[in-house]
Image 1 (cartoon, rainbow, N blue to C red):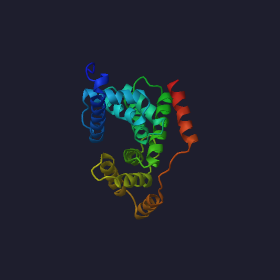
Image 2 (cartoon, rainbow, N blue to C red):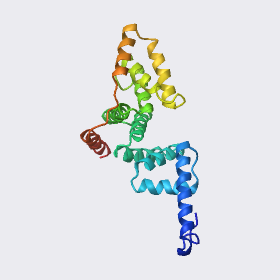
Image 3 (cartoon, rainbow, N blue to C red):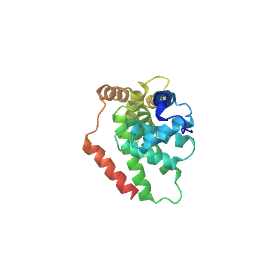
Image 4 (tube, rainbow, N blue to C red):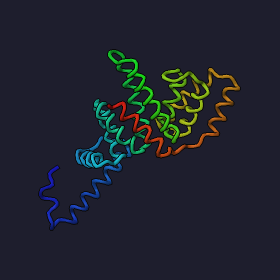
Length: 222
């Protein structure tokens, strides 16, 4: 966007008005997950480069849409390590995808490290109430994929995810997984799962927990 003739000293008020209008448009655009204009993308990119976690998370999603998962993973990682919960869940998802898709040429111990790191981020987000992460965990426990098969835990995380906005992807997936788990469970198992749901309280991680994950991330990247 050319600004050479817009922000001259004599046009300060016009410059401020344009900036405010663009920023408001960006907020609406981001909230509705609609394609960003070039101008809005520039603001989001600048904010991400300045270290704003919500902008890093948003920009990562745009990279995913354009197939650049490597850059998206880097941005999700930066936002996640700042404590931004949605990015923590998305980072866990991307790491699991990385482990699943790199079947050939990936050493077993490297894959295990990636999976362990992914589960840690997903669990951190899920325990803070992130619905997508809760649905992801529900699915993993239902299928016994990367974690021990556990129908009670699957029901628990599925039900917690289903308690979100009904039309949200996390809630829809959570409800589906919860129902799939319940069809394989005894009445006693369902009662136990419901008890775990009732006892659940979102957990804000202590600084030491996040530092531990940062340390693990550093080891993995190295």
